Image 1 (cartoon, helix red, strand yellow):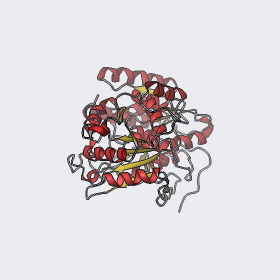
Image 2: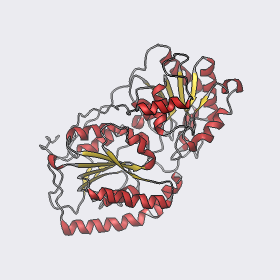
Image 3: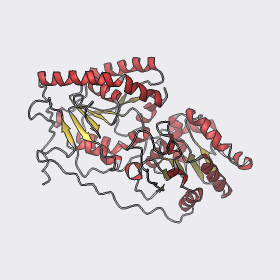
Image 4: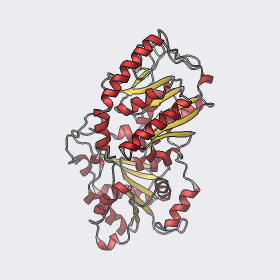
Length: 440
């Protein structure tokens, strides 16, 4: 299903279902007064849910790492869509997954039932829902029968209040990794937990399958520098795309400088990549490697691993490239680079915000209605300069000032921004390990 269809179903079908589930959960919570206290040794099953956005799943690595350190005996599972299976299987700290198939309405219904049945065989002790607005994700959380469920809220908690034992404020002005770690703090994750990304575990068979396709020059043979370009953005927000004529100009400039260009894209993005390539000078076009629509997700990881430099819009492959330690030029417009960007010496972030930028976390429909002037202002020569700086040995980017985050707690010891469900028994809250000292 297209993202627009999923959002429509989430609003039309999900809303009444969440309202009914919310009322039922509040009533049962009031009547049963179920205890929610858990000791550290009692946490055996942890579920982390994210149904859309592979980049966000990669950004959850610091949370996963901190949870594994906090509960080394616990099994950590990801609850996500079938299309993310290859990623989940290659994420460190993840022991398994529960998958829903969203390629059609019938498949979705059947797979949701199957996933909930599997989850209920060993209900999670802790369930972390990383979605912010999704009603579907909230229903999966309550359907898991998890002892303690953690979700995010922003503008309101009205449809979530009874479905989660705790809600954490989603602050879109903080780096997303720190936002996820704040949720972990509710179960005792230390405030000083590191937020660096660890590499996706690319497998030997992933590299072998890529080599068998003979799309790229053989590894280890030298030759021109390999520049991987991702001109795409998921249909969740197409305004993140850099204009096609800019991408075409970039390809021509880099190719004339002797660089080998590789284009990537999913099957649904292959037509857009082809349209970009059609704007390139025919003589140069013949030497460009277009892999769009031809690679599995695992093979994409192997391609990114081979890259000398990756140029990408703000979308999943950007996070994959950074996780794999590639020198990466990131193009930002509708999304704040302070929220989803990076402060790493091997990452260059190009961003020319206009009055309405960033807009994506503030409004459902971008004010530009697709004109994305914030992306058009990024010029091809700027991107070429960053690529050549990485390839020419002129030194890596100077990392920006470290994002200082002060994690304070309320007077009762709970992290700031954490809301406890009102129908829990008085004083009932999850306390694992010694209570941290309250910040004055």
